[in-house]
Image (cartoon, rainbow, N blue to C red):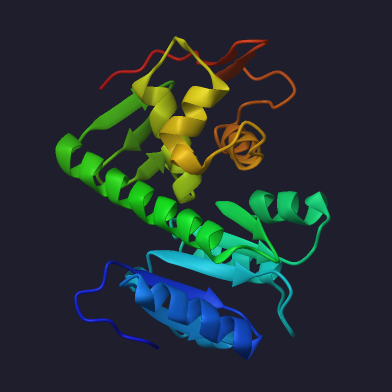
Length: 242
């Protein structure tokens, strides 16, 4: 662990190559971040996950691979932002990672500026959510029997059962309930949930939308809650009370 007094956030990274791990740790430390660097998953599992602001996870690891670790993290720390780093060029691996709950991905070899930009964006977005929660106080959105509590970031289904959301899924649902019954474009959703680092070809939001629909019980083949408005964007159809 590299501790930085008065640090700007805590980054955990799991990378089995010590050279790459040390370079990444040095990069983040220079930016005033506290770094927890691990060579495998076992050390990560022993860490205090509540103190981590972003997890950078290599896909190709000895023993447990990044996809398995990501899946476990979504159970242990569903709201922890995860940036998956992969040397594989196959887009299928990236989509699987997003399906398992990763918030973003970056392909190796990557530029250090690009890596830092992605991490800054994640940290900025996380802080903006915290500030919005502080401003919103105990805001609660209700729709079709569901309840979304902004302060606690809890989603409860009509039967009263809690439904775990990743940070990306929460951001997406928050954007929808804050703009109900109006068409929002994909670019607007990208801007509200992923910020300036997003590109028109960003697939993460598409996967998160699919996951969110499933968690809301919205048939992806014929969605009624989050409707696709062909050529225009999406419409959150339920009435929302606040």
